Length: 249
Image (tube, rainbow, N blue to C red; front, side, top):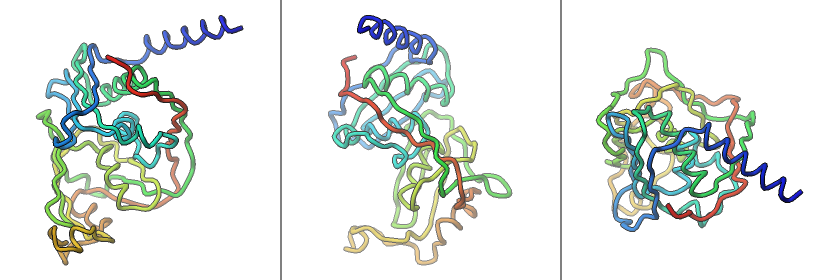
């Protein structure tokens, strides 16, 4: 029985390797220079994928297009570890294809095994507002950048909706779901009045909010052409059934 179990496991792993898209070459290493800001990018031609100073939980969330809050049972000591990735695609690939390759990389190097648990619940759903999105699509392949100007104003550069939705999760209660259907990366500025202020603002060390800034819901619609509504939705929950420390390249 043990031998049969080993054979079945090998066959399943081999089938996964044959059917799941993978980078031609990929190196993933623990981040040594923690002074670098987090970044994730693909080359303009879709041939290379890079990540810098990215926490493991963010890599998993990005790969599977969910917010951090939708991931459970990921050990805290692994979730917060930062990694750098340099990967090359065998052929020019779209971002969606690269995310499938990133999933494969996480499975191969961390022996990640997840269970998807779709659950119907009340959630914040990001959709396209009437009139369409007001976003500048970027194709320069540069790193994403999120630059906070004040407590209310933030500039986003080369940010995909999956990542933006994850960032928005910090401003809403409960789960948030991206139903925009937008698959590119974008440049935009968002200025809204947060419901609470951080210690830096309260202590006078950081710029305060614009007193005339609208609510998050209004700002998304007026400035970005997006709409955030609260309703019942099917939320993709990812349960981490198994994960190990980084395997050697």
